[in-house]
Amino acid sequence: MTTQKMIHSTEATNLADILERVLDKGIVIAGDIRIQLADIDLLNIKIRLLVASVDKAMEMGINWWQSDSYLSSKGKEADLETENRMLKERLEQLEVKIKAE
Image (cartoon, rainbow, N blue to C red; front, top):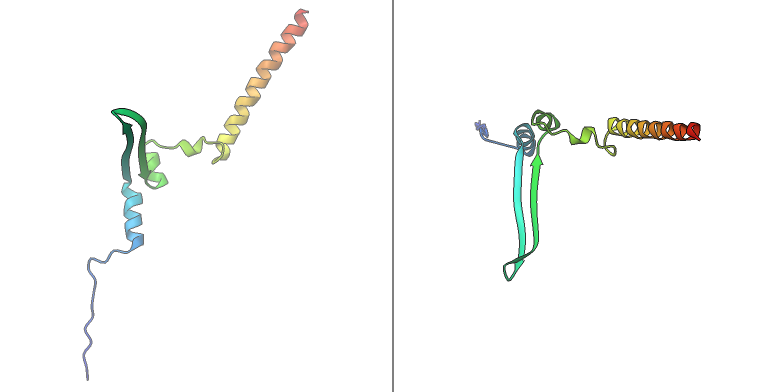
């Protein structure tokens, strides 16, 4: 009879665990690209990347996707309401001009 040893990995971390931690805590990646010629800046690019869950981003006060008309129906409704209000104001101005003539 042979005995089998059980092997446990106490510190095993898989991709899902890492992703969960990153999304839960958030991670910021920053970098700058600068191209100079004779001490004259030709190009200066600052790159900032934040990777976080939606809940974490909202907790940090980041919620631009809620008002973006391409990503949210709320944004589209807000754009339509603004356009509607502007058109009504313009119509009222035209009506006032017509009555004044």
